[in-house]
Image 1 (cartoon, helix red, strand yellow):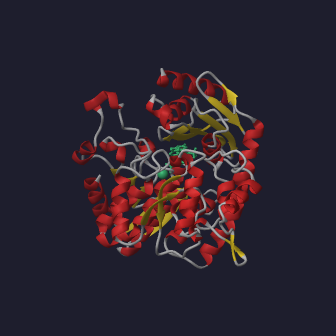
Image 2 (cartoon, rainbow, N blue to C red):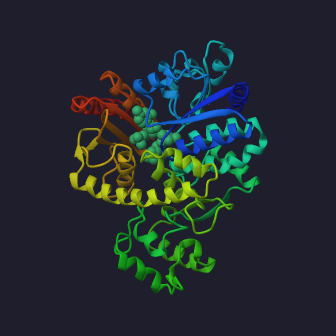
Image 3 (cartoon, rainbow, N blue to C red):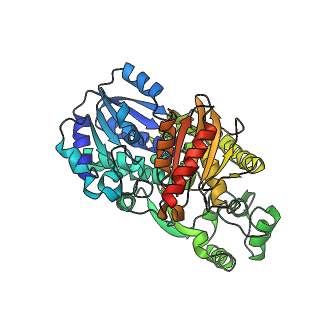
Length: 466
Ligand code: C5P
Ligand code: C5P
Ligand code: ZN
């Protein structure tokens, strides 16, 4: 990957103008922040374009701009068949089209095939090409970061954005910590003083949520009478003699003293396995304490609050250091996003999950925005309130058809599940587009193709898990 990053950096530095194209989620926005900051740093004229997905309509518009050189971040690898006539760099972690099955062994295309071939229009930095899993090894922002730090080692100061991207993509979810190439990026971040790694309680909201709210709303944790129970969670802290307030303001986890944190962790550990609520936590020490900017999960959520509501640009400005107007606007959007998520989970549960032989699905129509239906399905899936022995497919109405979001578990992936292939194959057969990762993937299909899509998905998953 480092070789590819070096060649990618050289190509970018030799351009006159670069068009950055990125994805709208937290990782895509972080990746664009990395790319744009790096291009600013080397004095390269550039523009940044965001897209929800790479489909024909978008690629036609992109080609019409006659871009000199494109830098795709957090997307591109799944769409190389559409890119004829364009050239540039792809720094992405989605499953590439070219990757032959791992079982095919030496038939699998490797990075070195890319290095050797002169007729490739794109230089690609992608973990799949060196046999790594793009779902956990490194994010889109991380891949962009590998390119940036080769332009100038000083750009290692952007490592925090690569960490935000990885956490935004939940690459720390299964192990409770980042893994693979992400660890090298963490080390850069620590060396440059832009990231601190703590082993601590890792529930969402450690900087900004009152502790009792953090516990009450802990999505991945189920403790009878405490989580999902406002009185119960307040009582839990009061029984431990922990003051919920300091003066007039609620105390967040980051406000608690070391000894208080220890007490809480020990008391929770008596109720649920300690690894369910602890793990690595990534702090951005240059940001203000008690704000959403200070910790990776909260920061990624702030970026999602922008990107998923047509304001990716705003999120990128925050990534690039705007702590004035852009940040204020982002904070505003954050409130709306929070409410949308809470409401949407309730809606999805009320509609109910339908069972097929190998998959389960829920069609939310226009009740949930297509840009967050995957997040909501993932949250519900991780909540323990739905059976997670089958992958879940959530469908929502989009302006160009039906958006499908699939989510699985590590257990299913280890058993052979590859949602990226399911989405790609089933969507392709119906004239749609799809792709992603083995554990999480998406597609867009025609409004009349839902039943056929689900039938095919059920069949493909059945084969994968057989
Ligand atoms: O487009 P992108 O690669 O940035 O997004 C990755 C997606 O995979 C995110 O929506 C993330 O929530 C999801 N994911 C998941 N569970 C995991 C890892 C990733 O739902 N264990
Ligand atoms: O949209 P959703 O959150 O369900 O996306 C899950 C994963 O699938 C993300 O990594 C996203 O980038 C990818 N995806 C894709 N092609 C699509 C839709 C989603 O690669 N058409
Ligand atoms: Zn990503």
